Amino acid sequence: MAAPKEWHLTVSSQTFLISTSRTLLNESFIQECFASEEMYWAKATSVQDMSLMLDNSLTLGLYKLQNPPPSQSPSQSSEKREFIPIGLARLITDYVTLAYLTDVFIVPSYRNLGLARWLVDCVKETVMQIPELRRCILLTGTEKLQRMYEKEMGMSVMQPERKTQGGEGEGHVLVAMGATKEDMRNAGKGTRGE
Picture 1 (cartoon, rainbow, N blue to C red):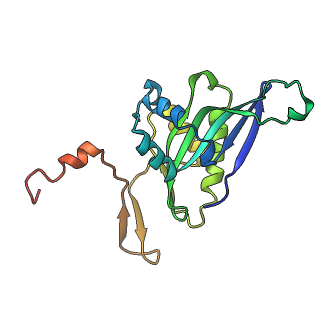
Picture 2 (cartoon, helix red, strand yellow):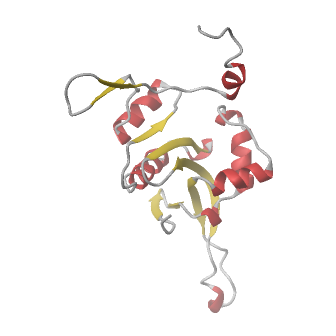
Picture 3 (cartoon, rainbow, N blue to C red):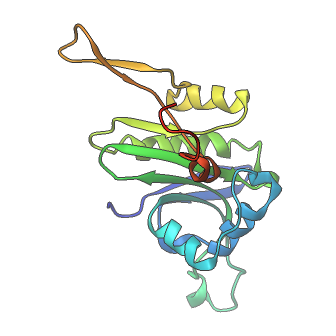
C-alpha cells in the first residue's frame, strides 16, 4: 500500500481536502452517514465492524479545512487546521487487479459545489494507479449518476462480455452478477437440478 495521497481545492473561499489517510477518517461521521436516509444503501455497523471495514478499504475522505482561531501568541499561529469531514468514497481493492467503488457520499449542505466531480476524479486517479487493473466496478441507483460515472470514469452498464482465446473462435462469456445477503441465505433451498 502506498503512502496516503492528498488533493486540495478552494471553492468560494472555502478550502477542501481529499485524503486517503486512514488516520484522518472520522468513524463517528461515517457511522452517521451510514445511518442517514441520504445513504439509503448502507446502515450503521458496530464500532468494531466499522474499524475493520475501514482498515480493509482504501477510503478517500473529503474534508472542509477550518483555520484555527487566531492565537494571542505569534508562536502559536502555526496550529494545525481542523479537518471537518463532509464526505467520502470507499474502494474495496486488492491493489493489483480489481477495485469496487462504494459509499460515495457528500453531506447535502456541501453539494452543488463541484465536490462530487472532484471526489470522483480523485477516485479515478487512485484507481488508475492499480498496476494490473482488470476492472473497476460500482453499483449506482439513478440514471443521472450513471451518466456522471460514464462521463467521469468511463463506466458503463455491464453487459455479458465474450472473452476469446487467441482472439478467434469460441470463448468464455463473462457476466456481472450479484446477490444480497438475503439472496445468499435463500440460495440452494429449492429443488436440486433446476
